[in-house]
Structure formats: C-alpha cells, structure tokens
Image (cartoon, rainbow, N blue to C red):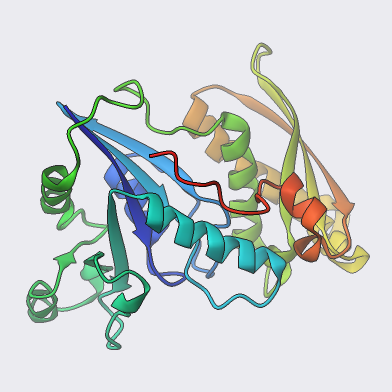
Length: 282
C-alpha cells in the first residue's frame, strides 16, 4: 500500500482548487474567478486500489499586506514543507516562466491546458505535467506520476472518504463561495462565515450561520434591497451543501459587523487561522 500527502501550490488564481476537484472527482473546494479565494487548506482524498492520495489545496503564494494574508502565506509554505510531493501550478496561458525558487524540488504542473493550442501544450510538456481541470486532459498521467512518488505506507483514511474536514467547514466555505460569486470588488475579502449550529438529525438538516463583514456599509450591501442579496447568497450556498450531503437543507443566515477582523489575531483564530503553522507530525 502507498499513501502520501501532495501539496497543490502556486500563486493565487492558478487553478489549485479546480485541480483538487478534478483529482478527487467531486466539487469539494470552492472555486472563484477572483484571486485569493482559498484562505485555509482544503484536504481532498482519492483512493485508487492500493494507493491513497491526500491532496492539500493550499492558499495562494501571495505577497501579504495584512495579518490574514500573512497567515495564509505561512500556511501555504508550511503545507509545502510537510508534503511528500509538491506540485507547483502555473497557468498554461501565462507566458512568464514559473518561479521554482519557492520550492526548487517541486514538480511543475501547467494548468488550464484547454485554453492554449496543442502546440503550446506540447512545448510545456517538455518542462512538466500539462493538465486541464475542465476536460480532464493530463489527469490520469499526473495520478500515475504521483503514485510512483508516494511512500509505502498504510492508508491514513477510509478508502471511501473524499475529504478530512467536517461538514461545518465546507458549509462555511460554500457560503464564502456564494459571496465571491455575488458580491463585487473588495467586499468578498472582508467577508467571512461562521456556522453556529449544524443539526443533522433534523429533516431538513438545519444550519444557522453568521456572516461577518468589517463595516456597517458592507452589512447593508450583503443584505441588499429587501433582503435580496442575502437570500441569493443563502440559496447558492444551500444548493452546494445539499450536493455534498445529499439531503435537503434549511439554511438560516444572519449578518454581523466585526470591525477589522482580518487584522485581529483573536478573530483570525476564531476563523481557523493558527497563530503559527502546526509543526510537521510526519
């Protein structure tokens, strides 16, 4: 048996979350056209026969400007250090060369291959793996390469699991996904969600969530005229949660103002950011 941790790393918006979903075979991680959507690592699992892949969708390797972004960068770097294999993602559409200095031993993976010509894909294949999360091109070959590099080890999780984090985590992520989809400009970056109650024993499943912004003016935007925006966010998130758990969901949402939470160490801990990345246990 083989089992190992694979880090999906790279600059913001290079397709890490889309690739995680393609590798796992489920829409597990939130995906957004806006950069920096992934704040905390998302772990996806795939078990093929005697091989278990543990994929870590890491925050983008951004140049941090405030405390939350510093935590995101630290989590990304820690995830790369702890992994058995590091995949450094770079869009096929970007003519700039990938920066291997962040992790010199990483395997290059060129994403978004469906957006470039066959000739361009052939050129990139000389330097690394070429994949498309949309068409699935290159995914089987990448899995074969990874399987060869993983260590001999007992499985860490049941073979039918696809993720390691609780449903509460994904419920909050899907609410943030809705915010990134429906809110403009910088507001999604000041937005967070906390699941206050999650009752699976009820039918439908009952979830109460508190949505946080940093200013009263942002709260008015999130609620929208006549509550239209908050209802749209709730509908989007509820649909995604139902897809994952396979059951009807009643989602109740409230909006609160939490001034400057992205710069407050106490509030960052509240939303899952450790003060320091956890030391490797491998």
